[in-house]
Length: 122
Image 1 (cartoon, one colour):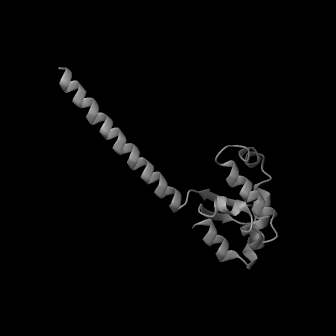
Image 2 (cartoon, rainbow, N blue to C red):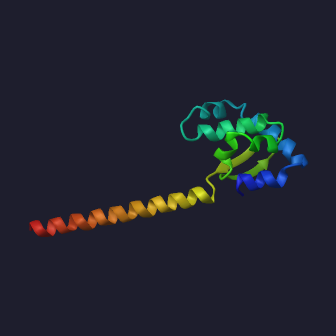
Image 3 (cartoon, one colour):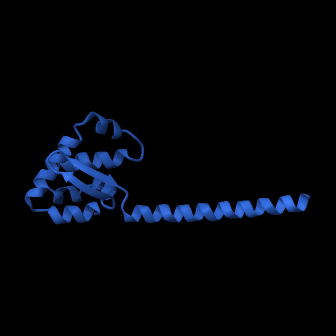
């Protein structure tokens, strides 16, 4: 499920408070703290920390951090401990598919061009 839809589904329920608490617990882990400084993934983990420190999901939506994670996918295993899986969402996978198709077409054209040059030499 996409994070934005997940947050919509739990907003105002008991699960909201559990998620916020779980994000605090998750972002206390040393491994996660180290990932916050890494390029690319750091913004996602910082956003999760901001989510955990927010008063509510509605408050979190008002931050710039929401924009960084709203299109990512989420699977929740245990809200109390912050056991969640964050992964690229459909929007990201579509981009990867487009990039792969362009790269594949470029590689095919390069190989065809290379074959032509060999035939002309011999």
